[in-house]
Length: 212
Picture 1 (spheres, rainbow, N blue to C red):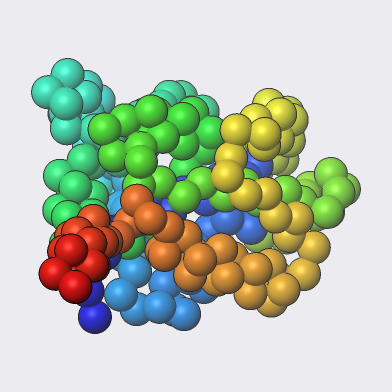
Picture 2 (picture 1 turned 180 degrees about the vertical axis):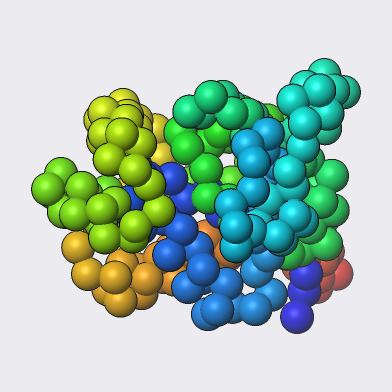
């Protein structure tokens, strides 16, 4: 099989709409996919492992990486910095491996506008309703009522950016949304910009015509 370029698969949504669950399902579906491990300045939760869930950095380390061009994107969310280290993503794309990003609209726009923007696939996940969005946030049991209220307040700002994404899915039934997501990924992998070998192939075809 002729090698293609890797994709930067961006999933965004308001908190609770399902982007993290869908990200995990994508990685289970195709083990060749890798997850972009974000860097953050927030403290790790009890179950989180440094280098697996996040790269936990001090604010000084994070700002230094940003100033040196080491972050593909970064944002300040709920009092903490988050960002995507650039080097491992660049290496994956050049090696033909897809990388999944679970990030907000600010990070998505930075990646789309970056030097790797031509190889992005951006997908926004909408909830079926605001009531369902709140129910999911409460049921996952990770946040206090105060944090849930802040996430709900922020959700409309997140949703208002849906129009800047390549695809938009309403996550009303998880299995169906996952199937739609797989279809989008498989089709985008065949996009002309992801097939650098096509130029040489067409040149060979042209040469064959000239030889006849």
